Image 1 (cartoon, rainbow, N blue to C red):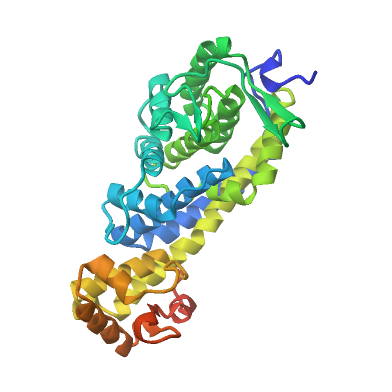
Image 2 (tube, rainbow, N blue to C red):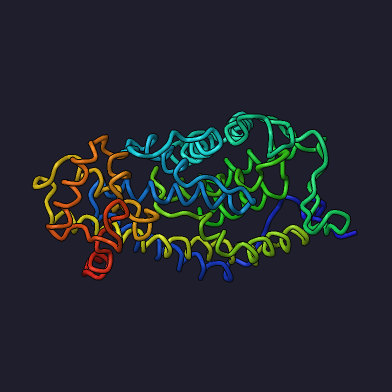
Length: 379
């Protein structure tokens, strides 16, 4: 039988080749600094929008990794309400989306608050507000009461990738994890601490379900601490989702070996770098949004028009399936059909919006994204 990481005599005294991880850490720190420089070129309002988009992506992708697909509009609604952004035209968030967003914001906005067993259990309760995972009733807000395995394959032909420590060890294992979390903060480079914490938490697998989402939130909390910022302007989970197979393979390889975790840390730190680079596209779009309003001052438009244009800019290219229609405009502004038509025609006549194919009731509009995205905008 394979020896799992937690069965190693050295557990949990992790070690690695410092020279091997040094390059990855340096490259990632450089990318983080470059992103920070771009963010400083934005006003507070645009920076909040970048944060909102990163949070939407984090919520959607951390769930998608586990096979759960949340409503994008529900997640956007929860994020907008919690960050004080306009949520007009969006549905009320469902309980699952709202609980996940609440948990993610608590991990990053309160990153300096102690990470305790009670806090982790509160996060777990936020993830499973009904007490069910799908159709299965689970133990919520407490450590799992039984064994747990990570498996793949069809029923009867499952492959066991990993088996977590037995339930009776969980109180002691989590006490040791939380003590290590605190002691490592002052002695371990922040990127490495995030990678160690994520692997350590996933290896213990303390809950019936939701361990992946919670473990990534722990990593996000560690990153927020080392960056000294309450705002998360990139999504680690979005990058992990893009590299899902490599992520699972790296975890499995680390959990099937001893406490030498150089390979895991090199991959994890590199993944953070790629997540930062992925976010730079959204930051560039935010800069272009700012330039859009410089070219077309909001003072020349009605409040209704400004609200809708901001929603289009926030959603980005293709963000409104089927384009902006009279009906959607009315949903966002509560205007009459006649007023919505006049507003849309005015924006089209000014060249701010472009009419898409169709006419009459099928007429839709969008921003001239090719022009917006093609402009020189990088700080």
